Amino acid sequence: MKTALERLIGQPVFIRTVTMYYVGRLKEVYKNELVLTECSWVADTGRFHNALRDGVFSEVEPFVSEEVIVARGGLIDMCHWGHAIPTEQK
Image (cartoon, rainbow, N blue to C red):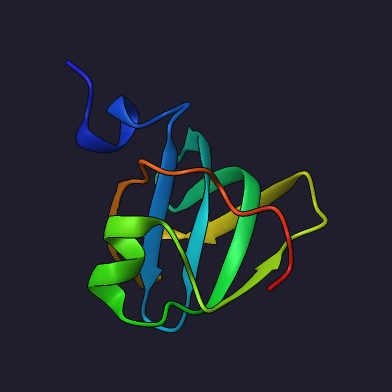
């Protein structure tokens, strides 16, 4: 049986950590890390509910790295991202 995280592999996700927000495609799940591709750091969501509903953020900084590793120790929550992954700096 797959875990909740494993069910999201290959899907676009929104991640909230204790200090930052990320949007990207979940590539791999490990005991202590998540690996994302197509990843952007969301510097400012704007109104949180509106950002989740509409898929639009106030400020976005795409990573130039092909993969980004996020430590699971700082994970607050994560959900499927039902919008396009932002790829342009804003």
